Length: 125
Length: 108
Image (cartoon, rainbow over all chains, first blue to last red; front, top):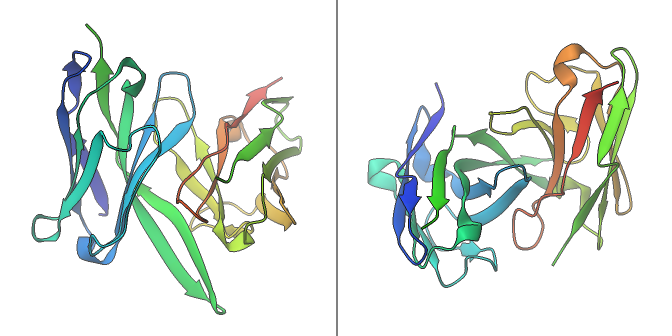
């Protein structure tokens, strides 16, 4: 079964740090680009960060650039998000999400086809 | 930066009715990069449609997507009780991943 399981969330004070982990199973992790997507209470999903399969291409949302760092260990089938200088507005459920890719009729299609259940991060004093 | 604007924010309909959801991009994007998700409370989003009009595996054929320029539409032909949920569009062009703000399909 294809599965993503996040861990590492919790309650942290403003200015603090957390490291989220995502354990992948049921597929060849090293073949896939990965994302972190978050969802604040009562809000829609917000893309946070993207990491290509080989870790060459890295992208961040402006809201987290300079504070968050995405990384992966393909040998351990794991994705990480180091979050520093946390703010109240970072409070959200954080999802690990696999980027699917399909080449058909000379077109590339991209989508998020596998999501974890999420881990909750609460930033509050 | 590509911004996706969804409308309406809420759609109040009865089971069996047709739902039409809109997603407009702030600039031209290839339809191959436009995706629709369904999300129910307490769950992660679920992939419905990719490439604007291709149903994902296991998605019933009452769900369909179309594209016209910067306008994208998700249609649910006949609402089933399990279809009442939030729906989000997302683009994978440029800086990957911007989502629209969502449309809630609720029971009238």
